[in-house]
Image (tube, rainbow, N blue to C red):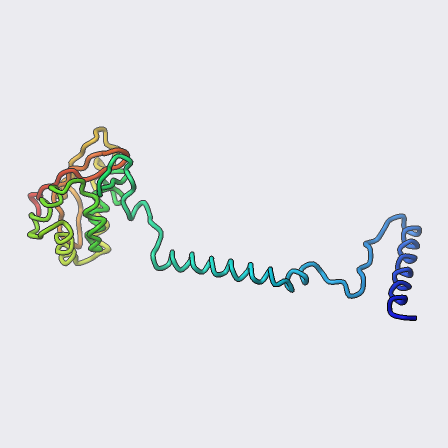
Length: 213
């Protein structure tokens, strides 16, 4: 008997056993698996397409993780959000005061010497120049850099505390925030800010030195 005939004979025997089991129990058991038959997952693992797809996904995942790790994802609390109504460089945040508000973020950007983000919160060139002149700098970026040198504690300086009244939702589209009314530690006070709602965001539209420094 050749191998093919033997295989057919074995299949016939299994079929007879299958029928006898049905007659005896009145129910059908799971059909027997053929000798040498492979499970589906073994077929998948042996597929070159599966391994190429897995390698591609790993490469994409690694690239996304590396980008987020080294460059980060913009956080609305860390970078100015598009106000929708400001067409120049300045963009506004969702509140004038508070750690995530315009003035609070201005202090934070100064603590890290982030000249671009700090100066972006000031709407007009003349206001930026006024701020620079007050600190003896040629431009806003230079003033931020010089002020950073006076910061003795980044952690405390970026945690500016605002009076409860300033944290309420403004009833007008323009508010004045005097640094003398804030609790500022670890660095210099940064003057008086006039913050105005332009579009959906709050930006610094004017600035002047404070009497307390």
